[in-house]
Image (cartoon, rainbow, N blue to C red):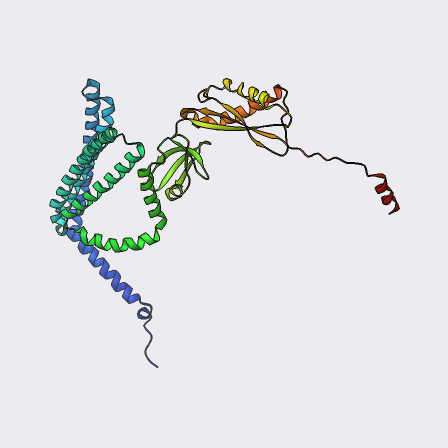
Length: 377
């Protein structure tokens, strides 16, 4: 028989030992070569973080002192504090990266690109603040509504961010043009997989440009009625009359019939009431019109009207219609219910019969001949 089977070799234990030994040797070499520098880098990070904390507290105290002395307005303190925090954080990150990369030979040449990227980020941040102020001034001068201001701000922010990514990448020798070409091919595949998202984005731009409604308008769709709270590139957010916030996909809003209750200013409200046949419609009209002065929301011009809308099988359907201002559109459903209740009570108080759903069954006695046939059977 042959020699004994090498169990360790069969189970791969020898290969595992060799791999662990090689890994231990590599780790030991790296620690020997870069260990002291790594400890020094960690110490520098702690020192710089402590220095950043001290400078941040000093800057905040300086801002509060300027506000107390009147050299800086209170409303500008938060903006100045935010700017200082961002600048200090960028500076801290730059100092840490430059110091740490200088300790490790493989990345020691990154100090220059990191510093240039830091300067670019500062310029982009300051430039975005100035550009945002210019956009706000121009939006007010062009009298753009909130939805178009949102579109303009989102597009500008996206373009500014892409410019920043391109400039910062160029400092590290990264050419984004071939990457963008490859992303174009990938984008086609992603576009087919995300058709609903793209449809919502396109519909959002269409709604922002077409402006069938604005922020704050009361609208009615097939399924919802409420006030437009916000309009993004993906959804239209509506606050219903029950206080619920509903996010409707833009493609559903753009492809549906949308009634704008606020755009026309005044809104006409319809209230249906019913009268029994034989009652006087003139007396009903007088009683119903006499109810409306108790509701200050109802306008006297245009004048309210009471009309016969339809003659049904067992009742006369009256239509009471009146107008309310745009500021009362939010509460018109409650107003309509109150007028309906008051109108019904006014008709009864005037002695007019108000019909209600009922079924009348009338039993007639059988004729004598039918009774005789029934008894014979």
